[in-house]
Amino acid sequence: MRRIVACVAVAIAATAIASPAQAQERGCYEDYLRDGRTIEVFCDEGRPGRFRAVAHCTNGLGVWDQYGTIGRVRGEPSVAECTSLLGYPRVNGYHVDWL
Image (cartoon, rainbow, N blue to C red):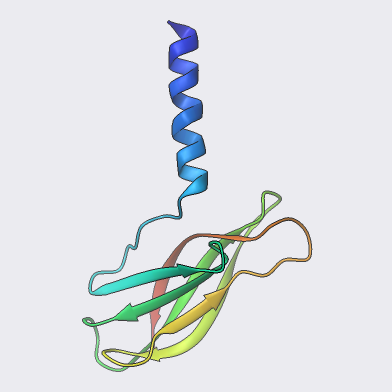
């Protein structure tokens, strides 16, 4: 029984690592690019004006936030790219800063 529970836990953890987190912002949707290293966020609803996507990045050694370009509601997307000198950086989620 312990082995089954351990296998299920490992499978869930592997799935969580392999797939990026879902969007948390209402009225916004995302597209992951470059094997999960870049996120492009579009917002159709929300506060009028401008916004910036903030990618939550990880490379297995640490976590950090990477700020993206400035986007417009119902217009230009905001693009944030995770970069790192060590390891393989990936987007592990994001949030939107309203400007």
